[in-house]
Length: 187
Image (cartoon, rainbow, N blue to C red; front, side, top):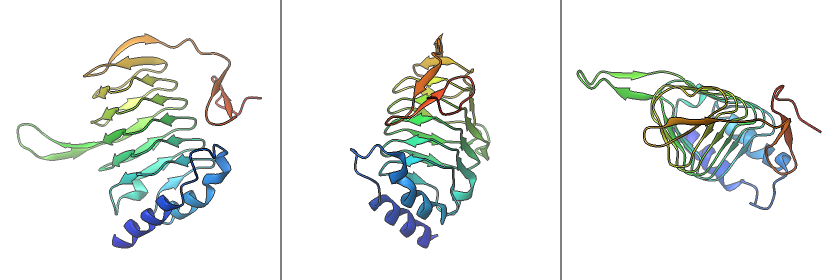
């Protein structure tokens, strides 16, 4: 496990500069992180400070065109899947493990984040949950329950505030846009 920590530290040093929004600049870092067992799709951007549990990297899947902000922490006691075109802001923490409050017996389950989601700054996802496609989690929210597709949730605990009206194309990173219905690159 120590070697995986070293590999992740090396990858962290190789993070492209903030001004380099060209998604292809991230390929070397992703290649190195794949050596730890992380399943990383194409054109993924992982900012500095990314952390996950050493020895459990193979339970994390980042699909194509995922962006993780600074200091994202994934405490992956079970599977964590982040679908395509999802953007996760800085200082987001996810954990899918916990303890039964009566017996203190540990449990874990999957966190599944749909396509085209936006997870705001400082969000905490603290249980096994599913977040539907195109959902938005407002900054500082604490998510403890499933979030429907297209919902905008906020608060502690997070509750549905409204639903998104989706344009035909949505900005992802740099000069990349995706189709909000097909999740293909939009021109």
